[in-house]
Image (cartoon, rainbow, N blue to C red; front, side, top):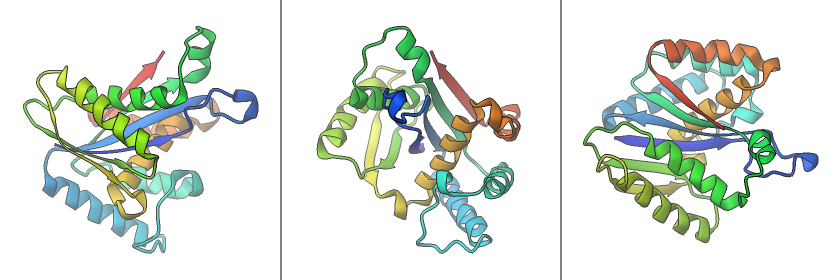
Length: 209
């Protein structure tokens, strides 16, 4: 099983200084390498239709709604599913939770990976690796521990990649951004777009709290 992870929002709690209320970790999950390659190529093809160069990085936050809608619609039939954790940080703070930003971020990622139903398959995980060395070391330890505690799954490979060169990490960015927008009433149309994935069993969102 191949898993590609990205996030939307930020793990900060300084709401008066611009921290986002919602934070999302999303992963795109592929049963086979062939399914991942097929989706990667189709994603690139769709982006080329918007005059996107192969070396240009897709970022949800820097892209128009029209492109989001087209991508979410046209990618629906491809062989992958999406798992996401949607965190309402304002509600967490209201309950008096004491969380350090780094630990919060890593725990959210580990939570969504640990929830994957991989049957007896090993996991090959790719995640944006532009963070600091301490973060990468902590992620390896946390992922291995959390996944090992669930149904005997194990991480066969954990890669920290540059998202600029990984279309499937960019794909995860698309779904992370759409899930975060869907939590905000003014962006109701993202909820409608994602409902098509839910109805096909292609999207699961865990809400915290």
